[in-house]
Figure 1 (cartoon, rainbow over the protein chains, first blue to last red):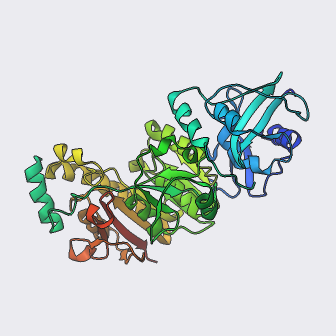
Figure 2: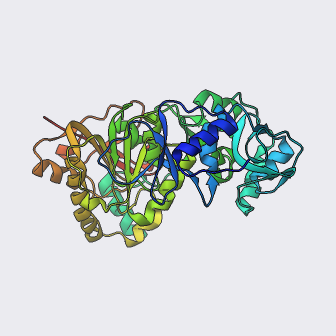
Figure 3: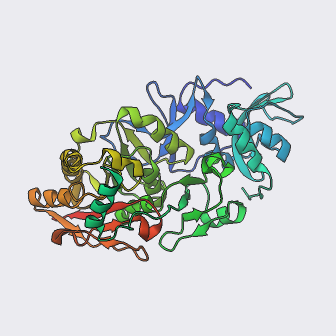
Amino acid sequence: MEIKIENAETFKKFLSERFGVVFPHEILLSDTKGHGIRVHSRGLMGNVYGLKGFQAYSGKNGINPYFMQLVGMHAKKNLIALNEVDAKKFIAGETVRKKIKILGGQGPVIVAHGGHILGVGHFENGELRSPFSQDRRSRIIQNRIKGWIGRDL
Amino acid sequence: MEPREFEEWVGTITGDKEAIGTALQQSFRINTLKIPIEVFDEVSELKNKKIKWDESGRTYTDKFDIGNTIEYFLGYLHPQSLSSMIPPLVLGPKAGEHVLDLTAAPGSKATQISAIMENTGTLVANDLPEKETTLVANVARLGALNVIITNRDARDWPLKNEFDRVLLDVPCSALGSNLNAMKRFSISYAESLALVQKRLIMKGFDALKEGGTLVYSTCTYSIEENENVIEYLLSVREEAKIEKIELEYVPHDNGLTAECKKCWRIYPKHLNSDGFFIAKITKTE
């Protein structure tokens, strides 16, 4: 699936078509000048300059995994659950080889483990690419997956 | 100050030379914006202990780096000292209100305020441009959606009569959170910081609506940076009134001057946590 995200409206449409995410009424997506698309609650006061909410999407870095950790639980499709071995790889920034069926073609998928949304990955040609960096900290965090008890989404 | 001189000075301030010598307890706050407390308790393997005055605050003794845990990665918790969790509780923001955190970086208290407000209303989190990166990162990781981040020098904060509540956790000599800070500490240093703090408290107070609440806090012990700043505000703003802090189960000493008896001084001996000074002030009509 080719992503053509130009503004908050098309991003919202993409999230709906790709993941079946229906936004709660109190959450808004807004266009900003030079700061991508931002997510924030409804009813922020006016007359104040500054960055409202946090960046949900930018053309450069794609979908913010922290944004997906927030809204991923509302997804109805293209949400894949990784086993412990693969979840560790994903957190550590490694590519996971996996046979999965994707609705709407190759592209972003929401990644979960044990009922916890880890973030968003890019699935293409049997490979799930992780957005996280392969640094020392990621390798330490991945080992915390062991024994992680499941959570209902 | 030299360690011996500092110890004696602390004794004159606290009335107890041992007040700040206690080993500090490690702690974190469960981020209710991303996970309900009961679910966190069910799924997390981090051994922790509850505290009496805030159900989201926890202490722990295990030797692990909290920033390297899966719970941190998922934004389920935020490392924060026990005493640093108190100013937002004293502020007591309500859902839907307009709140200002004038010196918000790195965002521990700001995101706690956001959680108390359940992501509703508006929280304006301000700090200098060079501190914005950590503030933005914490706001995103913890999923705070009711935040507007601004990067003004707080001494030049322009908005007046706008906010229901203002948190002012000012830059200070940090004797309560960093023992090495004693090396550069002197009374004249505290007096120079107090000049900035007096300007900041004026800006914070003027940003309040009538009937609004300001919480002023520092992580230091000097009277110059604490009681003197509060008394300065009371002397120049007749609508400023010190309020009693209503928070149960938190051990503390009272402020050191007659006018500031309602203020709190929290020393490491009280909570095994950082030293703090907290004042609650309302803008009367």
